[in-house]
Image (cartoon, rainbow, N blue to C red):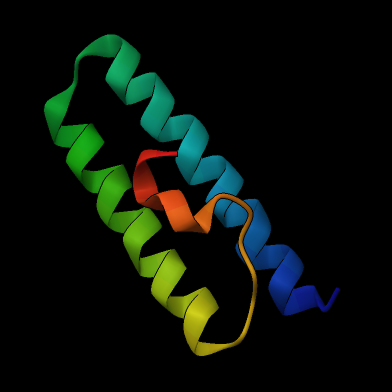
Length: 61
């Protein structure tokens, strides 16, 4: 795996964790922020042929 792909994967893991925390806290603003971040990362990954685990289920994973 390239350094770029590893970086994208790490950023996705961090964003998913932050999204889970925001949901658990009921913070709708942060849910929106982290959902947008995941959507952006998914586009970045797709544009650069980087496969993301769980990408088919979208940002809600």
